Image 1 (tube, rainbow, N blue to C red):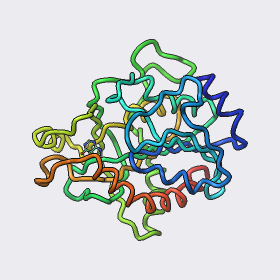
Image 2: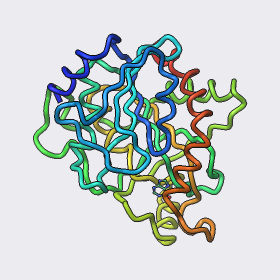
Image 3: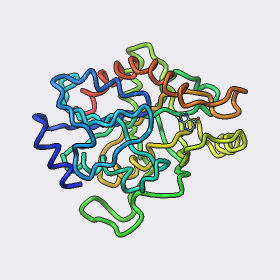
Length: 268
Ligand code: HPA
Protein backbone atom coordinates (compact mmCIF):
# COMPACT_ATOMS: atom_id res chain seq x y z
CA UNK A 1 0.00 0.00 0.00
CA UNK A 2 2.78 2.39 0.93
CA UNK A 3 4.27 2.36 -2.56
CA UNK A 4 0.86 2.89 -4.18
CA UNK A 5 0.03 5.79 -1.83
CA UNK A 6 3.39 7.43 -2.50
CA UNK A 7 2.92 7.00 -6.23
CA UNK A 8 -0.49 8.70 -6.10
CA UNK A 9 0.63 11.43 -3.70
CA UNK A 10 3.46 12.44 -6.04
CA UNK A 11 1.00 12.85 -8.94
CA UNK A 12 -1.84 14.82 -7.40
CA UNK A 13 -1.67 18.47 -6.40
CA UNK A 14 -4.53 18.22 -3.86
CA UNK A 15 -4.60 16.70 -0.38
CA UNK A 16 -7.86 14.74 -0.58
CA UNK A 17 -10.02 14.58 2.53
CA UNK A 18 -12.85 12.46 1.12
CA UNK A 19 -12.54 9.32 -1.02
CA UNK A 20 -15.42 8.18 -3.18
CA UNK A 21 -15.60 4.63 -4.48
CA UNK A 22 -17.72 4.46 -7.62
CA UNK A 23 -19.58 1.21 -8.23
CA UNK A 24 -20.83 -0.62 -11.33
CA UNK A 25 -22.13 1.80 -13.93
CA UNK A 26 -21.65 4.72 -11.52
CA UNK A 27 -18.27 6.04 -12.70
CA UNK A 28 -19.85 9.23 -14.12
CA UNK A 29 -19.30 11.21 -10.92
CA UNK A 30 -15.61 11.34 -11.80
CA UNK A 31 -16.48 13.64 -14.73
CA UNK A 32 -17.60 16.44 -12.40
CA UNK A 33 -14.26 16.59 -10.58
CA UNK A 34 -12.59 19.94 -11.26
CA UNK A 35 -8.90 20.14 -12.16
CA UNK A 36 -8.74 16.37 -12.33
CA UNK A 37 -5.54 14.38 -12.02
CA UNK A 38 -6.22 10.99 -13.56
CA UNK A 39 -4.13 7.91 -12.84
CA UNK A 40 -5.11 4.59 -14.46
CA UNK A 41 -4.96 1.72 -11.98
CA UNK A 42 -2.52 -0.16 -14.21
CA UNK A 43 0.10 2.54 -13.62
CA UNK A 44 -0.08 2.33 -9.83
CA UNK A 45 2.35 -0.12 -8.22
CA UNK A 46 0.65 -3.15 -6.61
CA UNK A 47 -2.86 -1.82 -7.35
CA UNK A 48 -5.30 -4.70 -8.07
CA UNK A 49 -6.77 -4.33 -11.56
CA UNK A 50 -10.53 -4.48 -12.00
CA UNK A 51 -11.79 -6.97 -14.57
CA UNK A 52 -15.55 -6.40 -14.20
CA UNK A 53 -17.39 -4.82 -17.12
CA UNK A 54 -18.61 -1.35 -16.19
CA UNK A 55 -15.63 -0.61 -13.98
CA UNK A 56 -13.32 2.00 -15.42
CA UNK A 57 -10.23 1.45 -13.29
CA UNK A 58 -8.73 4.84 -12.49
CA UNK A 59 -8.02 7.20 -9.67
CA UNK A 60 -9.32 10.73 -10.22
CA UNK A 61 -8.28 13.42 -7.74
CA UNK A 62 -9.42 17.04 -7.76
CA UNK A 63 -12.04 19.31 -6.26
CA UNK A 64 -15.84 19.00 -5.98
CA UNK A 65 -17.94 21.71 -4.30
CA UNK A 66 -14.72 23.18 -2.91
CA UNK A 67 -13.70 19.89 -1.28
CA UNK A 68 -10.47 18.11 -2.24
CA UNK A 69 -11.57 14.60 -3.19
CA UNK A 70 -10.21 11.42 -4.66
CA UNK A 71 -12.44 9.05 -6.58
CA UNK A 72 -11.74 5.41 -7.18
CA UNK A 73 -13.62 4.72 -10.39
CA UNK A 74 -13.88 0.95 -10.39
CA UNK A 75 -13.22 -1.52 -7.61
CA UNK A 76 -12.20 -5.16 -7.41
CA UNK A 77 -14.51 -7.86 -6.09
CA UNK A 78 -14.17 -11.23 -4.41
CA UNK A 79 -15.82 -12.87 -7.42
CA UNK A 80 -12.92 -11.81 -9.62
CA UNK A 81 -10.72 -14.04 -7.50
CA UNK A 82 -9.22 -11.34 -5.33
CA UNK A 83 -8.50 -11.86 -1.66
CA UNK A 84 -10.37 -9.78 0.93
CA UNK A 85 -7.11 -7.87 1.53
CA UNK A 86 -6.84 -7.00 -2.18
CA UNK A 87 -10.46 -5.87 -2.16
CA UNK A 88 -9.64 -3.26 0.52
CA UNK A 89 -6.21 -2.31 -0.87
CA UNK A 90 -7.48 0.96 -2.36
CA UNK A 91 -9.14 2.03 0.87
CA UNK A 92 -5.96 1.37 2.81
CA UNK A 93 -3.97 3.43 0.33
CA UNK A 94 -6.51 6.23 0.86
CA UNK A 95 -5.89 6.06 4.62
CA UNK A 96 -2.15 6.48 4.00
CA UNK A 97 -2.98 9.57 1.92
CA UNK A 98 -4.70 11.07 4.97
CA UNK A 99 -8.30 10.59 3.79
CA UNK A 100 -10.69 10.55 6.75
CA UNK A 101 -14.08 10.11 5.14
CA UNK A 102 -15.22 7.66 2.52
CA UNK A 103 -18.32 7.46 0.37
CA UNK A 104 -18.96 3.97 -0.98
CA UNK A 105 -21.40 3.55 -3.85
CA UNK A 106 -22.69 0.39 -5.44
CA UNK A 107 -25.34 -1.18 -7.59
CA UNK A 108 -27.70 -3.39 -5.61
CA UNK A 109 -30.73 -5.58 -6.01
CA UNK A 110 -33.87 -4.48 -4.18
CA UNK A 111 -35.28 -7.10 -1.81
CA UNK A 112 -37.68 -4.78 0.00
CA UNK A 113 -40.34 -4.02 -2.65
CA UNK A 114 -40.11 -0.31 -1.76
CA UNK A 115 -36.57 -0.32 -3.11
CA UNK A 116 -37.49 -0.14 -6.76
CA UNK A 117 -35.07 -0.02 -9.71
CA UNK A 118 -33.65 3.45 -10.31
CA UNK A 119 -33.89 4.56 -6.69
CA UNK A 120 -30.97 5.53 -4.53
CA UNK A 121 -30.87 4.21 -0.97
CA UNK A 122 -28.68 4.83 2.04
CA UNK A 123 -27.04 1.83 3.65
CA UNK A 124 -27.81 2.00 7.36
CA UNK A 125 -26.24 -1.32 8.28
CA UNK A 126 -24.97 -4.49 6.67
CA UNK A 127 -24.96 -8.26 6.90
CA UNK A 128 -21.70 -9.79 5.77
CA UNK A 129 -22.51 -13.09 4.06
CA UNK A 130 -19.34 -13.22 2.00
CA UNK A 131 -17.83 -15.68 4.48
CA UNK A 132 -14.65 -13.63 4.70
CA UNK A 133 -13.27 -10.57 6.46
CA UNK A 134 -10.39 -8.30 5.40
CA UNK A 135 -9.12 -8.23 9.00
CA UNK A 136 -8.51 -11.99 9.16
CA UNK A 137 -4.90 -12.71 10.07
CA UNK A 138 -2.41 -10.87 12.26
CA UNK A 139 -3.72 -7.41 13.14
CA UNK A 140 -1.73 -4.45 11.90
CA UNK A 141 -1.94 -2.23 14.99
CA UNK A 142 -0.82 0.77 12.95
CA UNK A 143 -4.11 0.50 11.03
CA UNK A 144 -6.53 -0.13 13.88
CA UNK A 145 -7.65 -2.37 16.75
CA UNK A 146 -7.92 -6.17 16.70
CA UNK A 147 -11.67 -6.16 17.38
CA UNK A 148 -13.19 -3.03 15.83
CA UNK A 149 -16.71 -2.03 16.85
CA UNK A 150 -19.23 -2.01 14.00
CA UNK A 151 -22.29 -0.87 15.92
CA UNK A 152 -22.39 2.33 13.85
CA UNK A 153 -20.40 1.34 10.79
CA UNK A 154 -22.42 3.74 8.62
CA UNK A 155 -22.20 7.13 10.29
CA UNK A 156 -25.53 8.43 11.62
CA UNK A 157 -24.38 11.99 11.11
CA UNK A 158 -23.42 11.36 7.48
CA UNK A 159 -26.77 9.66 6.82
CA UNK A 160 -28.55 12.65 8.30
CA UNK A 161 -26.55 14.97 6.04
CA UNK A 162 -27.41 12.83 3.01
CA UNK A 163 -31.11 12.78 3.93
CA UNK A 164 -31.14 16.58 4.27
CA UNK A 165 -29.40 17.01 0.92
CA UNK A 166 -31.89 14.61 -0.69
CA UNK A 167 -34.81 16.52 0.80
CA UNK A 168 -33.54 19.75 -0.72
CA UNK A 169 -33.52 17.93 -4.08
CA UNK A 170 -37.01 16.51 -3.56
CA UNK A 171 -35.41 13.10 -3.74
CA UNK A 172 -36.70 10.12 -1.82
CA UNK A 173 -33.75 8.48 -0.08
CA UNK A 174 -34.82 5.45 1.94
CA UNK A 175 -32.45 3.65 4.30
CA UNK A 176 -31.89 -0.04 4.42
CA UNK A 177 -29.78 -3.01 5.38
CA UNK A 178 -27.38 -4.25 2.70
CA UNK A 179 -26.56 -7.94 2.55
CA UNK A 180 -23.25 -8.74 0.86
CA UNK A 181 -22.89 -12.03 -0.98
CA UNK A 182 -19.80 -13.31 -2.80
CA UNK A 183 -21.41 -13.70 -6.24
CA UNK A 184 -20.83 -13.78 -9.15
CA UNK A 185 -24.06 -15.69 -9.77
CA UNK A 186 -27.11 -13.71 -8.79
CA UNK A 187 -29.17 -15.13 -5.96
CA UNK A 188 -31.91 -17.70 -6.23
CA UNK A 189 -35.46 -16.71 -5.26
CA UNK A 190 -35.08 -18.94 -2.17
CA UNK A 191 -31.92 -17.10 -1.18
CA UNK A 192 -33.72 -13.78 -1.56
CA UNK A 193 -36.57 -15.00 0.66
CA UNK A 194 -33.93 -15.98 3.20
CA UNK A 195 -32.24 -12.57 2.97
CA UNK A 196 -35.60 -10.83 3.45
CA UNK A 197 -36.27 -12.98 6.51
CA UNK A 198 -32.97 -12.06 8.12
CA UNK A 199 -33.63 -8.36 7.63
CA UNK A 200 -31.95 -7.35 4.37
CA UNK A 201 -33.46 -4.70 2.10
CA UNK A 202 -30.69 -4.70 -0.50
CA UNK A 203 -28.28 -7.28 -1.86
CA UNK A 204 -24.96 -6.83 -3.60
CA UNK A 205 -21.46 -8.16 -4.11
CA UNK A 206 -19.31 -5.35 -2.73
CA UNK A 207 -18.96 -2.61 -0.12
CA UNK A 208 -19.04 -4.47 3.21
CA UNK A 209 -15.38 -5.52 3.20
CA UNK A 210 -14.44 -1.94 2.36
CA UNK A 211 -16.64 -0.64 5.17
CA UNK A 212 -15.04 -3.05 7.65
CA UNK A 213 -11.53 -1.96 6.61
CA UNK A 214 -12.48 1.73 6.65
CA UNK A 215 -14.03 1.56 10.13
CA UNK A 216 -11.00 -0.42 11.34
CA UNK A 217 -8.82 2.51 10.22
CA UNK A 218 -11.07 5.05 11.94
CA UNK A 219 -12.59 6.46 8.75
CA UNK A 220 -16.18 7.70 8.69
CA UNK A 221 -18.34 5.93 6.12
CA UNK A 222 -21.32 6.95 4.02
CA UNK A 223 -22.65 4.28 1.65
CA UNK A 224 -25.22 4.73 -1.09
CA UNK A 225 -26.75 1.98 -3.19
CA UNK A 226 -28.30 2.49 -6.55
CA UNK A 227 -31.10 -0.06 -6.81
CA UNK A 228 -30.63 -1.41 -10.31
CA UNK A 229 -33.09 -4.31 -10.27
CA UNK A 230 -35.61 -6.17 -8.19
CA UNK A 231 -33.79 -9.06 -6.52
CA UNK A 232 -34.40 -12.56 -7.87
CA UNK A 233 -37.96 -13.78 -7.48
CA UNK A 234 -39.35 -10.37 -6.44
CA UNK A 235 -40.67 -10.15 -10.02
CA UNK A 236 -40.69 -12.88 -12.70
CA UNK A 237 -37.96 -11.05 -14.66
CA UNK A 238 -34.51 -12.54 -15.13
CA UNK A 239 -31.45 -10.64 -13.91
CA UNK A 240 -28.90 -9.36 -16.38
CA UNK A 241 -25.70 -7.44 -15.79
CA UNK A 242 -26.47 -5.16 -18.76
CA UNK A 243 -29.69 -4.12 -17.04
CA UNK A 244 -27.73 -3.36 -13.85
CA UNK A 245 -25.34 -1.12 -15.82
CA UNK A 246 -28.15 0.58 -17.77
CA UNK A 247 -30.20 1.49 -14.70
CA UNK A 248 -27.03 2.57 -12.87
CA UNK A 249 -26.17 4.89 -15.76
CA UNK A 250 -29.64 6.47 -15.58
CA UNK A 251 -29.25 7.20 -11.85
CA UNK A 252 -25.76 8.67 -12.19
CA UNK A 253 -26.84 12.27 -12.62
CA UNK A 254 -28.96 12.18 -9.47
CA UNK A 255 -26.16 10.50 -7.56
CA UNK A 256 -23.68 13.11 -8.76
CA UNK A 257 -25.99 15.94 -7.69
CA UNK A 258 -26.51 14.33 -4.28
CA UNK A 259 -22.78 13.86 -3.74
CA UNK A 260 -22.06 17.47 -4.76
CA UNK A 261 -24.45 18.67 -2.08
CA UNK A 262 -23.27 16.21 0.58
CA UNK A 263 -19.51 16.65 0.18
CA UNK A 264 -19.02 20.13 1.70
CA UNK A 265 -21.02 19.09 4.74
CA UNK A 266 -18.99 15.98 5.50
CA UNK A 267 -15.93 18.00 6.37
CA UNK A 268 -17.69 20.62 8.55
N1 HPA B 1 -27.81 -9.25 -6.53
C1 HPA B 1 -26.51 -9.14 -6.21
N2 HPA B 1 -25.76 -8.11 -6.61
C2 HPA B 1 -26.34 -7.17 -7.36
C3 HPA B 1 -27.69 -7.24 -7.74
C4 HPA B 1 -28.46 -8.34 -7.31
O1 HPA B 1 -29.66 -8.48 -7.60
N3 HPA B 1 -27.95 -6.14 -8.50
C5 HPA B 1 -26.79 -5.42 -8.57
N4 HPA B 1 -25.81 -6.05 -7.88
